[in-house]
Picture 1 (cartoon, rainbow, N blue to C red):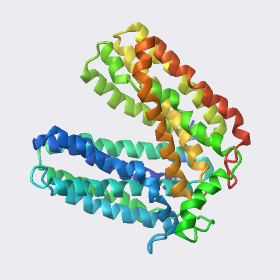
Picture 2 (picture 1 turned 45 degrees about the vertical axis):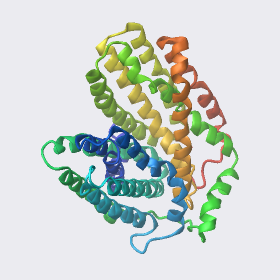
Picture 3 (picture 1 turned 30 degrees about the vertical axis):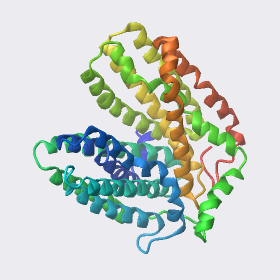
Amino acid sequence: MRSIFNVFASTKMLVVLLLGFASGLPLGLTAGTLQAWMKTANVDIGTIGLFSLVGLPYSLKFIWSPIMDRYVPPLLGRRRGWILLTQLGLVITIASLGFCDPQLTPKYMAFFAVCVAFFSASQDIAIDAYRIEVLDENELGAGASVNVMGYRIAMIVSSALALILSDHIPWSSVYLIMAACMLVGIVASIFGPEPKNSEAPPKTLTEAVYKPFTEFFSRAGAVEMLIFILIYKLDVAFAMALTTPFMMDLGFTKTDIGAVLKGVGMFSTIGGTLVGGAVLSKWGIKKSLWIFGIIQALSGFSFFLLAKLGHNYPMMVTAVCVENICSGLATAAFTAFMMNICDKRYTATQFALLTSFMAITRTLVQTPSGFIMKSLGWEMYFIVSIVISIPGLLLLTRYNKWQVHHQPGVE
């Protein structure tokens, strides 16, 4: 077992962990934490709702990702240089956001919140590209899982810890502390190794915009790969779409649900991705996608059993643990797959596009999920979540036909 986890014992993994922390930290500061601050300041709920629009840069980041493929900053290289620039932008804008007043200067608050989201989304582009290029093929799964762990820890810091601090110190001080926490990522970007990429970056911005598309769609099985990305985790998205209403229907309190879903569920996901990343380094991507995909699908039976048993706290905890661990295993393999199919000349753009495409899955299943549940009931709803895993697994039979590797990689 120790040899399986040796893949984590490297300086690169430590850098990926710290950069994962830097990537996750800004999210809460423009979402739940910012909403809590505005609520404390008695800002109108309608205005608070409008502030959700500040998160748009996360959905639109593929638009400017070609710039980060094309141009090389003067310091630290193409990937670390962009990471450092975006982190410095985050330090300045997070601190500036802290000096705004929700009541007196809402426009300035909105401006700096958008700036934080923009620099955060840009940092994500650069960190994703860095992770893909700096890791060897057998390290991709482990790197994905370590990144998830750092990201989740950061979200605790910028949400739970920030809210606790706000009860004892002014909000401006809270945001200054959060800005200082970005130093973790700055240290990692300065001292981390720059990827040794033999591929030359695009020569022009025009090439950086259209070449990632033409290169990808020139490959055998390109459309099949996109469909696979769209549906591989469809079963999990469907099963988890109505988790909170489901548990409330069974009589669990909101405290029960919050503690288990956010606490136990989070640590289960981290554990699953870490184990998945370690095992993937031995099994390879294809085998891991098969085995973890089947396990991920069958985990829906845990919620089916909970629906059968009703208000049963041990079964509720078990179902959440099983679902999140199995989902974490599959996430490690799935993320490694997406990392591995990116051409290293256009890593930033292609991975930004693939993750944006993947996000469509949540919208696809959340929209009709309530109507399906009303028609079938909870027990059959979770049976359906298992059945809809089949198309994704069937597409895996085409894996050997896909041109997924531009360099020697993991089969």
